[in-house]
Image (cartoon, rainbow over all chains, first blue to last red; front, side, top):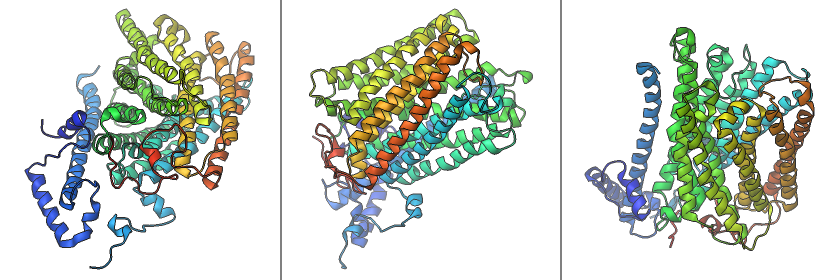
Length: 96
Length: 525
């Protein structure tokens, strides 16, 4: 399964310590982030959240986590907005 | 390379102080605290409205307020308590406790969390400020039924705008909670290892995302009927007022569970702690919570039996409603089974939790009675219904909130709450609560309609009793204020695990919980 529900489905199966599966865009972003980390040293590295990995993995992990958060959040927001629109349109277009 | 301080290393900056700290904070604990303070202020505001209503109803005739203002009070009391007090209070609990319980450093969207909260005060100002506009506040009841809501003055527009803002706040808060629970759990914290409070809030958040947009759609249609010439609900233009009721209650019934499921979660945390036993039937509690949430979408028309519907429709909604008693019964059974042969002690949180089970179950039973269509047609719009939903929402939601507050105050403040005052608060509340609301069952069965400022002489005695009880109940809540203030200012120091039988990640951090927790995610085994 891919797309916005991938993160949630994986959690349902295996909990939060699942391996992360970055897509191509994510991988590119992660590489840029790691490069920045190497340039600036501690400026980015302190954001490492998990103690179980080296610095690079940690930065990647937090990056992926944020992307997953954004995906799930956006998906839920779209669902909420769709409900709002459907309720009005249903009665506007079809009446009762 | 220059030395790196701990603050730099962990991305902490001194940050703004004073008022700006609270306005700009993205810390889940700060935001949780603000939610709870806000909700308590709104609780007191709604309480003053309730006491004004009860003062008017103390005896027959008109003594205190005019009928128009009375209707405004009943409407605003409902709106303020539902959207301003109960819901934000639970969101405050979620903000404070969910990250601590799942081992997350903060909520998933910290800035959005700040925004979710700061939308509420302007909405509250709009809602309460509507009393002062020409025509006064909305007086259509908290349900804002058409055609009244289509016809009223500017106060209705303010109420609609306030509901929109509070709805956006609720949806943002719900999205934050879902994402936090799904994506931010500590390694090893699988869904079925989560504390039940997190489970109940996860399901509640999905309910919020599903139904708050429906309410927003309904009030938007009222708004366009009022100002843009549409006729969704305006019978004069071919619209249908009953359709509004269907849409409203499609939101309204899940809303009841939005206000009670987190309460179930709080009670499910407290009872095992003071029975010193694991929660009986954890998995069945999770499935029961999900069942209640799913069934809540299929029962809305039991609020509308009296509007007239086909017999098949009545039967469907009657049986679907009665079906909810099954998972609810599972929960009550599991709480009692958890207590069974436990090494129980009755500190203040446990008193509130057991009190909750007792009075909430009474509210549940009267709900079952109201679900029976032929009976509901008799008691529709009488004080029986008022008694029923106050047993569910005051004795249910509010008592659970107090239970949770007493349970987690040590973690929030670092001090143990006063046992003596806490117990006094409980006993005063439960006694005065029953004096207030139990006679309302008799009033309703005798035919006293709700939302009226005057009544026939035969209802006088029970109304006087209810009014005395209401003032006692209202004053009792000031004890809670004293307890909290004392707890914040000092008192007996709380250990990290403030209660002997308490389990969970939140009890592994010091009391009071430091500003930043779980920056290194704990491993749950």
